[in-house]
Image 1 (spheres, one colour):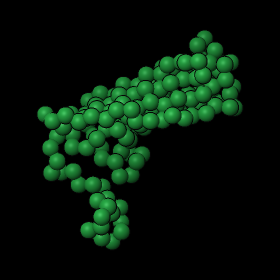
Image 2 (cartoon, rainbow, N blue to C red; image 1 turned 90 degrees about the horizontal axis):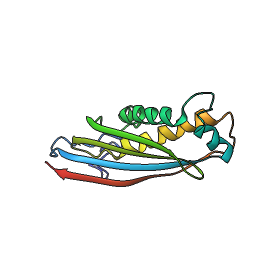
Image 3 (cartoon, rainbow, N blue to C red; image 1 turned 180 degrees about the vertical axis):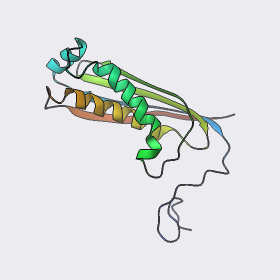
Length: 150
């Protein structure tokens, strides 16, 4: 077996076998930001964007994205998510997205938290692209990851 647990002797990628691991309570929190022009921020605050309520739609999109992480990331295990919360807030330079994902399982849930943030930010971008050509998505970061024995 190769030193990398996700690559077998033939050099092919495989999902890591977590079958013998004990279930644990897993929590992950992530954040990210999209920088917007002041005019775009004002349109979002006024709920005047043509596509609708940017903050609410991005939150729902982030939840959907987080739930589909194993379909998007090839070697990611599908998880039984017990909580996925996505919050979009306006700040002085744009929109901040925060997520929290929870599960009880054998592997971490950080990819779901990060995917939720990423999809929510991409949704803000999509909804604002007609009025803002200078948007910048950055700071996508895992801010906490914990596991607790049951």
